[in-house]
Each structure stands twice: as structure tokens, then as C-alpha cells.
Amino acid sequence: MKKLANVLYVTVPEAYLSLDGENVVVKKEEAVSMRLPLHNLENIVCFSYPGVSPALMGACADRDVGLCFLTPNGRFLGRVSGKVKGNVLLRKKQYEVSEKTDESVPIAASFLLGKVANCRKVIDRAVRDHAMLVDVQALEQASAALKGILAVISECRTIGDLMAFEGSAAKIYFSVFDQLILQQREDFTFEERSRRPPLDNMNSLLSFLYVLLTNDVASALETVGLDPYVGFLHQDRPGRPSLALDLMEELRPVFGDRLALSLVNRKQVSGKGFTQKESGGILMDDETRKVVLTAWQERKKEVILHPYLKERIPFGLIPHVQAMLLARHLRGDLDAYPPFFWN
Image (tube, rainbow, N blue to C red; front, side, top):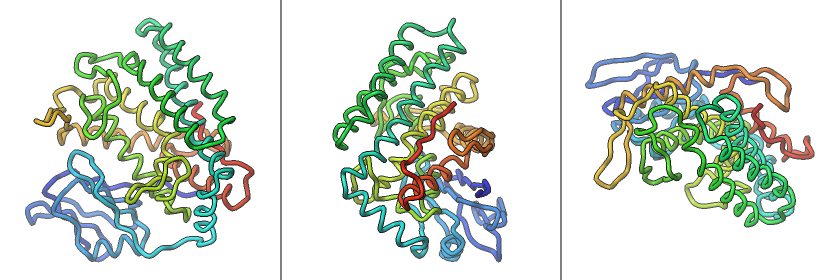
């Protein structure tokens, strides 16, 4: 089993990264602020503008250390990748299956089954744990509606039908999401999902967490030899990691939504950490970003029992395990792709 390695998040906008022997050196205004062994890292995520030295880029590419660039407010800019590696036969099979409706639809349906089931679990847990603080009737109705969608997903025969049900499920889920916010409701009121830009504090928090998840999932897919840009549910589009978006659908409620709710309900973040731009978009400040990143890393260390493998693994390895299971299915070792169902 792959080990859960460290991720270096560089959040200081003025930071510049370079390579010194076997170490990553982080400089701010020509002064060294951090030095870390490169072999201890799995990914480097930069929220800074000055950049990274070519030597460090080359070392990351050679050693399969992910290197991702984001704007300070979390918008994806790009990834650095080395030579194409892995099993070429696996990638060829991936491309072949993506072009065949009868083979791609069952995989896409599995992603969607995992997403809807996990959304429903988030709602059901709120009813179970906080019945005195939430509108139980509204949440139970939403859960029942999602259960109905689960019953028909497997009958879909086209990607268009699956995307229609995905849209319906998302609308139901987010229509009651505000009920799950138990603290700081004035600062984190949620009416609907908004992106590019996020128009309220909770949407800003969710979008930031989804970017982190996308990066982790894309890295996991590359690690097992799959192409993160050729998907089954999301259509191919230049520059869009469609397969990463596919796989993260089932993980969003567990990795993103649950953590966002915990950060707000435990008052680890506050409304003061968000500001509104002239365009109406909401930005997270540096201190809040650091709190979120720390919580993200701590959550990834938590150990759970994987529902399919029946093994105890760190949360952060779930994307890798799911990518591995998808690769095994494409190779013909598994009859179907088993989505991650949160228990």
C-alpha cells in the first residue's frame, strides 16, 4: 500500500522555491524561511507568484513529486509533469473505453452513485447528531429524494441521462445545505452553489477545498498510470482534468463538504477571514487559508476502514485507492468499478 507522504503548501505570495542539493528551499525577500528534504514530499502546492526554479521543477518531475500552481485565492493555474510514464496499455484502454458508451456509462454511473450516496449520508448524519438544531422534516425529505435518484442511476444508458440526475441530486442536496450550518449562520448563510466567482463565504470555502481535492485526485490518477484529462462522466475539454473531476464527485461530500461544515461549526474560521471584491467574488485571507490547509492535512491523517478493501487506511489515501481500483477495472481485474461509500 502506498504511504501517505507530506504535502508542502506555500501560501506566502512573495515566496520563491529553489533546489539546494536534496532540499527544497523556500525564500522570502532573499531570506531562507524554510528548508525541507525533497524525498519527504509527495506534492508541492504553490499559492505564490514569484515561482519555482527550473532545477526544482526538473527534480520534482524526475521523482514524481507533484508540483501545482494556484493563484493566492485558490484558482488553478497549472501543473508541472515530467515524462509520460506508467502503463501505456492501461492508458490506451482508458481512451478506448471513454469512446464507447456501453463501457463508459457504467463507470460514470458508479461515480454518480458514490456522490449521491455520500451526499445522503451527510444529510442523514446531521439528522442523527443534531436533530434539535435542524429542520428534520426538510432533511428527511431531501434524503428520501436522493434515495429515489440512487434507485434509477443504474438504469441510465447515456451520459446525458446521468448528468441530468447529477444536476437534480445537486439541486436537492444544496437546497438543504444551509440547514447543516449550525454556527455563525449570519456570516456563512448558504442559498445556492456559486462558482467563478463564489458569491458568499461558504461557497468560497467549498471552492477552495474542491481545488485541493482536484489536485490530490489528479496526482493519484497519474500515480497509477491513468490520464487525468480523459474522463467518462465529464466530457473532454482542453485543459480540464475530466477524469479527476469524475473521481472527485464521490469524494466531494466527504472531503470538501464535511470539512467545510466542521470548520464553520467549530468556529475554526470566521466571517472576518473573507472579503468581497468589487466584482462580487469572495476571497479568503492568508490566515484563514492557513487554518484550512492545516485542517485539510490533519483530516487526511485520520484512519478509516475502507468499505471495499476492508483495510484501515488514512483518509488521504482514499483518492489513491480509488484510482487504483479504477485502473484494476480497466485492466479487467475487476468486473466493475467500486465507488467509495462513506460509512
